[in-house]
Length: 52
Image 1 (tube, helix red, strand yellow):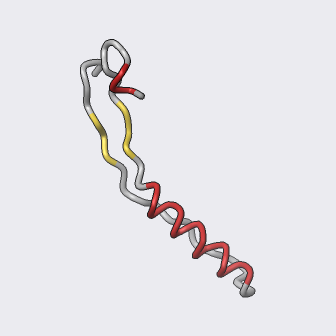
Image 2: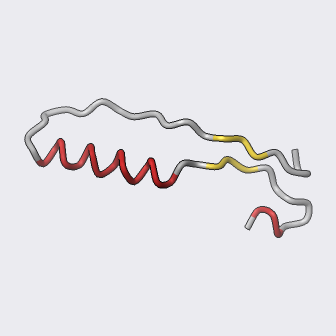
């Protein structure tokens, strides 16, 4: 969607598949009785377009 604006907007690309995998992994750990799960930080990518 950011590509279709004028000027094209600079955005952040997030790893959606990895986010889903980690969410499921953490949820299953909690269901299995983990009292605490550590936060997960996934890498993002800056997509520079004409608005930057």
